[in-house]
Amino acid sequence: MFLSIAKNKNENQLITNRELIKEEIILNFKGDITSQPSKYSIQIGKNEHLDVPERKMGTPDYYWAFLNHSCAPNTYIKNKRLIALTDIPAGTELTFNYNTTEYDMATPFTCNCQDQNCLKEIKGYKYLTNSEKEAIKNYTASYLKAFISQ
Ligand SMILES: [Zn+2]
Image (tube, rainbow, N blue to C red; front, side, top):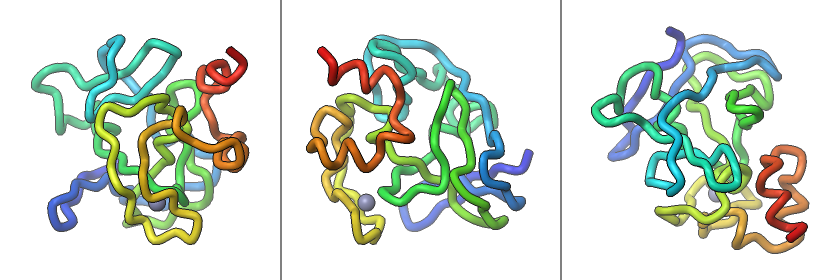
């Protein structure tokens, strides 16, 4: 297992312990499918969210629940897989942009990623402006795009 959890202040982080190559598949998401988002769930379909089964939090199959958001992430999610957006050195925290998978988040928060394009309030795709949607379109889940065309 080349992934591990590290604690930085009060925040858990998912770390890669080896170098990852751009477009490499890092992990396959598995979990319980639910109709409601939770703090840790990841949206996988229009009304489907993947959540960590009871008492499985912190076990390696569900390390994905420790993926933090970044407005300038180093991974993205496609077809229930986490993929390296770029080459990633060993020892780096893995992040993805929550707005590319989540429509309306259960637990919105204020981002402090320091990127020059940081959106600050991270609440889900629903709340993005058209230009903010445009900026992430290459990595946006197809079910989110379906929400627009309604
Ligand atoms: Zn940010």
